[in-house]
Length: 253
Image (spheres, rainbow, N blue to C red):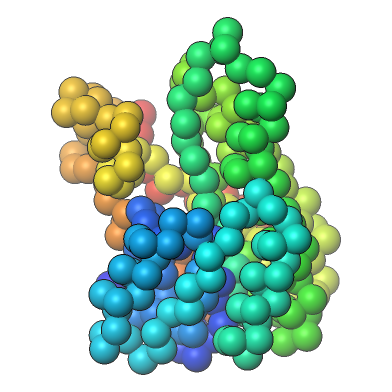
């Protein structure tokens, strides 16, 4: 699951939205690499189940913190707790997101603000809160999860697409600001990843077949496909890479 990144062993890693889907795969991947992992999520049952499933399988059992990322004061407190528990914060993975669909005609200002409060705003404030710990430790890596959704002209998720495009701009700006402190900032843009939420709410067999037909790689992407790219960007293997975006979509045409 996680090989080839020995520098991550023992390092403090924080993952937002780590209780399920891609986030859960990342938590397991970093833990398998020997990192000390804390993760934030509002879904308590799924998160505690993940911790239980990893017990006895990894050197350092992940530390779960329940937090609503829309509450910035609570987010800041959770990051302080994570830093205290882990002893340091070398890596931040801003993964949390909700790709809710919504009709153009029905969106109200509160709906728009709620979407950005989940999908974009926490990325900035998490980076802001983590940066001092990374500076104190001599550097670090921030990996922001965006999406190819904003590149595909998908009409049913304008708020989500705007947020995911914003993450790319945020990544570039943070990289410029934090680079002198040896803090790298990059973004991953996943393609059509078949998480349980996607299959339950948005994607049927016809959608899956259509997506695979557009990919160079003729198979479905799963959450575990994001582990390698994320660990690469978090590790010293990418020590000279910052302000970049990495598309992981199976070669979608």
